[in-house]
Length: 64
Image: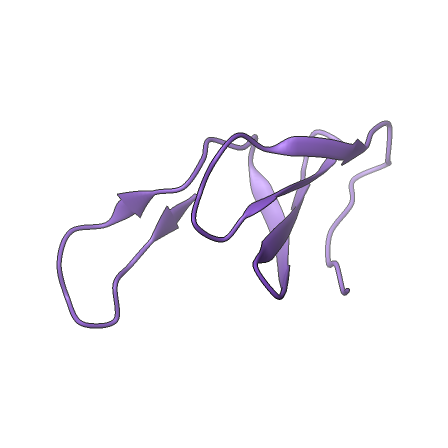
């Protein structure tokens, strides 16, 4: 996952996730579905993803 500054500049790496499919944001938290069957969360400023669900069958969209 990367962030692109709106005022220009180089991309910022937020975290490494496995084939992200769906992305949602709530406040300062990103929620990402991975094609591997996981849902992870991480701070919008970047950091280590926290797995919040596993074993899903091809999760796609996500809403919070």
